[in-house]
Image (cartoon, rainbow, N blue to C red; front, side, top):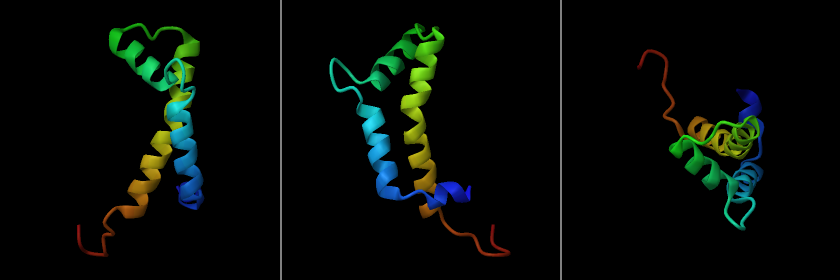
Length: 78
């Protein structure tokens, strides 16, 4: 996971926000795909790929932040 720790945080934040909001009109693809998923209409491979493409930067950002700010355990303490 060192590759994730080495990613510049500002760029990761920018990419995550950009992919979450793109395209702004008529509505962001991420919202559209989440709505389709909740209604059971997410069945085309292109839609599944689109959901993964727009979600991946957000997941990477969350994982990067979790790794950065998680409590550090010392040897012998659970």
